[in-house]
Length: 262
Image (cartoon, rainbow, N blue to C red):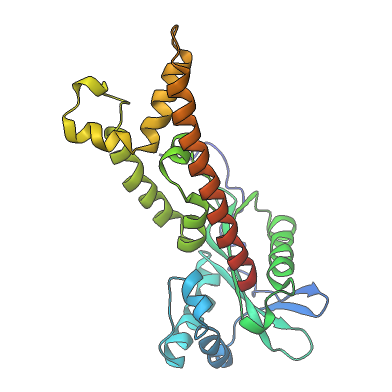
């Protein structure tokens, strides 16, 4: 089936030119990866915080060399664009920034980055992603860049007590969506969303008593009914408020840990 619109960015826009180096200002440079970067990348992945925020581990410099070769080939394949973030004067590796899941037809891509331990707290990640974003919009012509994070729906807020913390830990959109589905669907069917409590088996009613999604359902229905039971509304609403406070506290702690890692 043919597309009705022309591609946002024509195929070959990246592949037909060498990958550029991008000055980031204040002594920062984004440059293409080189084979000689393998030891520095391997050393960076020995940091325990890298294991917390990234799903890959590096077991040898040869494995990292294979990564770099793959990153280099992705430019011509136009599926990813990876840069080493280095000190402009010394060429010391400070981190990595990339466009992943590039869709030229749609004009969109996903931003990814990491920084080495000694470069954190200096704004390296912010400056690198800003430089890359400016290049992607102004030079290539992309329309949208995505930086994945967790933004739950209203119902998920009731059923998932630590969504933002989960997003910081998992860091992969597909994994987050899977976990959300894994949690939300059972909690929905184990609530009064589709079946009255009086019609439920006893074991389901006991689960519903501790189900935040059911708390929201019961409080909402009672508040909107002609004969509202404000005791029920306040008790369920108070439980949801307590859960939200705990979720905010956990999310803040997780985000602060994340800030120290970039």
